[in-house]
Length: 118
Image 1 (cartoon, rainbow, N blue to C red):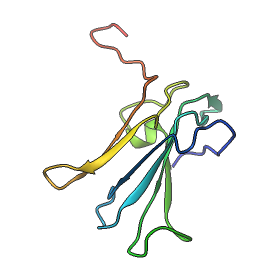
Image 2: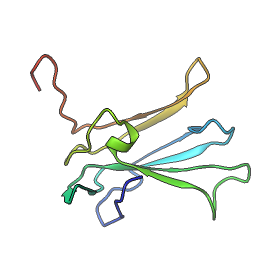
Image 3: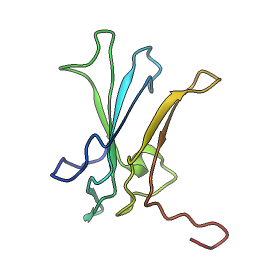
C-alpha cells in the first residue's frame, strides 16, 4: 500500500462507493480522498489523491475490518501517481456481466497524451 497519512484538507469522503471488490460475497466501502498528499521517492506529491477500501464481512464493518490504501500507481500499475491528479475524486463500483467486480476511479487532474498531444 501507500504511505500517505491523513491531514486537514484531504477531502476524505468526497466520494464513496459500495461494491464487493474482493468477490467474497460482502460489500466493501471505498472512500476517496482526492486532495491527499502522497509521498513518493522522497517527494511529497501535493493533491495526488488516494482511496481507502474498508473490507466488509458477514458481520458488516467495524473493529478489525481490513483497510487497504491505494494511490494511483498502486491501484493501476500502468499509471503514475502525480501531484494535482486528484485520484479518488469520483468512484463507481459494480459487477460486470461476467460476474467480475469493477471499480472506476475519477482522476480529473490526470494529464493524458494522445498522438503526442496532452
